[in-house]
Image (cartoon, rainbow, N blue to C red; front, side):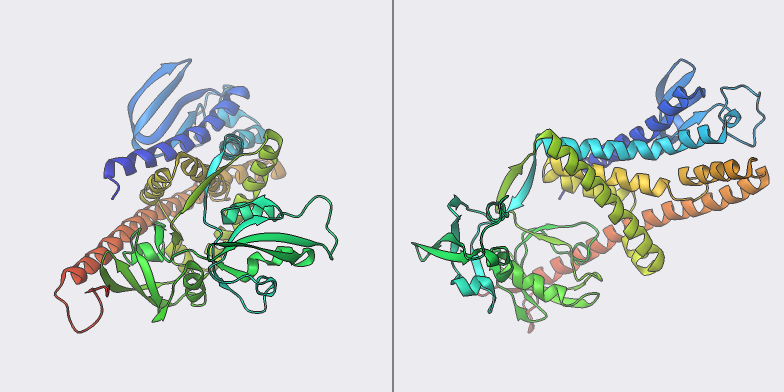
Length: 459
C-alpha cells in the first residue's frame, strides 16, 4: 500500500506544477501588457513563505488549493487611482488576453510535455504474441492459426510480442497485389511452421484471435468499480456471473456485455477463492488492466513527435469536453465521476509507480483538464471574466458593478459547491474501498462455511 507521504508528495508535485504554470501565464502577459502585479501565489490563504521583488510578492500560501495572481486595480469594489498600470484601467481586450493566458499556458505546457514524451521515449505494456483462441470463420482461422500457436515472424520480420506484430503488419508504402501471399512463421508444439496470408486479409488477422493473456489483475484504477469493490493487484478472476474465464479476452467479453449492471466476480487471492460484486460503468468496464508481461520503449523523431503531440493534445481536449457535456446531460455520471485533490494525488502516486513517463502523461492530461474547466463561462473562473470582457467589447461599456457581483457570487457558490463535493466524493471512494477490503479480509479469515466464498482454492 502506498504511504500517505508519497501520495501527498506526488499529488503536490502534479498540482503545484500545473498551478504554477497557469498563474505564470497570467503573470507574464500582465507584465507584458503593463499591468502591475502585486502578488504571485501558489496556494490560497495566509502567506507561508516567499520574497518580494520589483513590487511583487512571490509567495507560497498555506492552503495547497489553486493559486492566484493579484494585480493592481483588479477588484471592481475597491477604489482605484486611475493608474494606467491598474488591471481595470486597461481596455477590455487587454483584460481578456491576460485572463485567457492562464488556461492557454496549460495548453502549451501539455503540448510540451507530450512532445518531450514522444521525443525522449515512453514505455508501453506489451504481451507475447501467443494465441489463446481463434474465432471461427475469421481470416485467422482460414489460414490455419490455432490456439497455442506463437507468432514468430511476419513477412520475414521477427516478432515476439503483440506490439511488434502490429508494427510489422502496418501497410507498406506501396500497396501489395491482392493475390500476393504474406508468409507468417509460427511455433506450434515446439515446431516451426510457415503459413501464408492473402494480402487482402492481412489487416483482419489480429481481429480473429484472442491473445493468451491470463485474467490476472495487473492494476486496479483508482475510483473505478473494481477499486470500490476491494479488488487488488494480483487477484486472478476465475469467473464472471458463474461463467469461467481462462484468458483476458474472455474476461473482457463477459464484462463488456453487461454495461451498468451489478456483476458477480469469482476471484482467487493467494490460495483462497472469494466473490465480489462490482457495478460496471455504462461502457461496460470495471477499471482494471492486465499484468504487463513485457515493456517496450518507443520514441519518435522530433518532427513526428511534434505532430503526435499536437494530435494527442487536441484528442485529449475533445475527450475532456465530451466528458463535460456528458456530465451535464447525465448528472448521475457527474456524481460518480467527479474527482478532487485526494483522487488526483492517489492517481499521481499510482502513475508514478508505473514509471515517470506515466506521471508526465497524467500531468499533461490534467493540465488540459485545468484549461478546459477554467475556460467555462462561469463567473469567478477565467472563462467568466473573459465572457464579461467580450460583453463589454460588444456593448462598448462594462456590465454594471451590481450585475457583475451578482453573477460572481453565483459562480463562487457553484465553485465552492464543486470543491466540497469533490472532497466528499474522494473521501467516499476511500471509505468505500476500506469497507470492501475489510469485508473481504473478514470473509477470507472466517472459518470455512457451506458456501464457496472465502474457501481455500482446490489444488
